[in-house]
Image 1 (cartoon, rainbow, N blue to C red):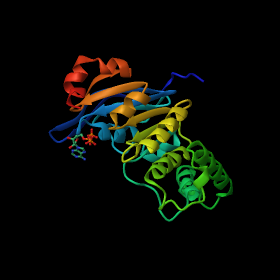
Image 2 (cartoon, rainbow, N blue to C red):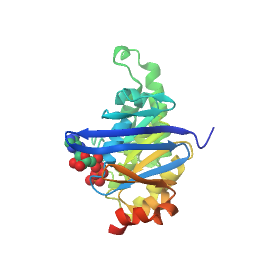
Image 3 (cartoon, rainbow, N blue to C red):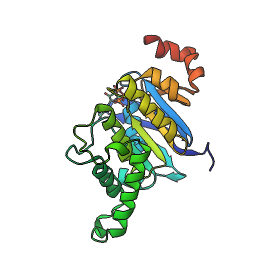
Image 4 (cartoon, rainbow, N blue to C red):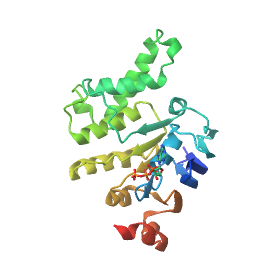
Length: 250
Ligand SMILES: Nc1ncnc2c1ncn2[C@@H]1O[C@H](COP(=O)(O)OP(=O)(O)OP(=O)(O)O)[C@@H](O)[C@H]1O
């Protein structure tokens, strides 16, 4: 396996809404074996970028490539079947179902085709296996039969990652996985990301700068819809443009 192959890339992505240019000629490459963080001030365009990469939004201009395929016009479900997993800022868990059921639903939603829903014995088996593997990977095996609703905030975020892993992705798009977490929960999530990056490409949008600078292999800094730098954390820290435009404010 080539550790540094590019699994997901955006080329010259521009997104306009009327007179507003939310993304202006943005390009980036996400490689296997890395956590690639995207940081930027509020309104810089991070969510818009993640929505375009995941297929929820079609860009005004530019191209998205997933595992060598031009997926710019692919729907979000088709990209998911093609190896792209995404976790959301909003809560997507079914609170009355168990951890295991939530993961099985995520796995089934991805592999099932509406026209073969009755022919599901084999698919059931695959989704059960994918779900169990994801639960193990995410460190939730102790609570796999627990109802999701009463889990701690940190466990719920882990469950969201587990649901994403249940779809067996090669690329993970994680939208603020550390939001609202305490110190211990943050450590657990960072350890999980460190482990997952071994065989995935991870794009991380995150406001916790300490965590980003600890975990990221590469950081893309956005200001007003433009990428002003993509580099290692050490080089980003010492980049004068970044200091002026972004880090100086914190
Ligand atoms: N559906 C939309 N229609 C019009 N403008 C939008 C839409 N979605 C986002 N925008 C605008 O695009 C710009 C980029 O927004 P986006 O949410 O991508 O930024 P962000 O970096 O994710 O911000 P935050 O850190 O606050 O989540 C903002 O000016 C926002 O108001």
